Length: 157
Ligand SMILES: Cc1cc2nc3c(=O)[nH]c(=O)nc-3n(C[C@H](O)[C@H](O)[C@H](O)COP(=O)(O)OP(=O)(O)OC[C@H]3O[C@@H](n4cnc5c(N)ncnc54)[C@H](O)[C@@H]3O)c2cc1C
Image (tube, rainbow, N blue to C red; front, side, top):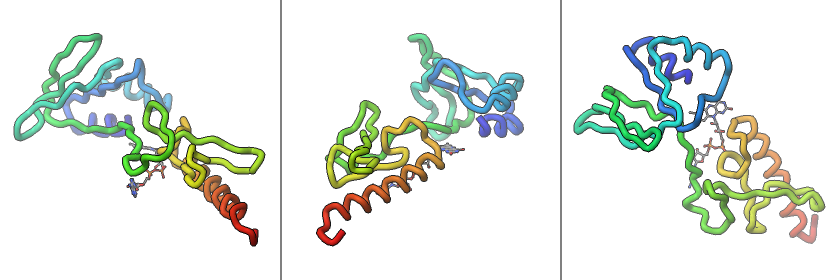
């Protein structure tokens, strides 16, 4: 949304194509977007394609089962989330491809996956909040758990 406001300062018209029923985020920014005459929001809308041969000429917009083309000169793909788990064929994933994690409070361990030796943290795991501070905290929990796990495997611990 910040990017749309910035773009609206320099461009004649900005379209936000949003797959959800409404925009989510900071209320002040939402208000500013709503009152900005240069920004049009399409909710419940999917981007079906970007058209053009050597440069962007349009965006195909799918909404309520209908498709129409918006003539545009540029497209900013601002958000999208596909967990990068192609390298991991071992752990269990949820329907979004996120690694399923769980805690074991009996053993004081968190961020365990379906495979005993693999721990997961951050956006790639099935934690709903995708924020830097959450990922960082999950990292610390994971390191402590992995340390505890390795210790439990060692005679010297
Ligand atoms: C547009 C946008 C805006 C955002 N704004 C905010 C914000 O304002 N505030 C906020 O708190 N959060 C924001 N976030 C979310 C935040 O960026 C993430 O929650 C956070 O970066 C997650 O950290 P992470 O370490 O789990 O993953 P990442 O930061 O994505 O780090 C994963 C790393 O792993 C690397 N990698 C991937 N595959 C492999 C592989 N096979 N081998 C080795 N390395 C690999 C990647 O290159 C990357 O460096 C935003 C995200 C986006 C996309």
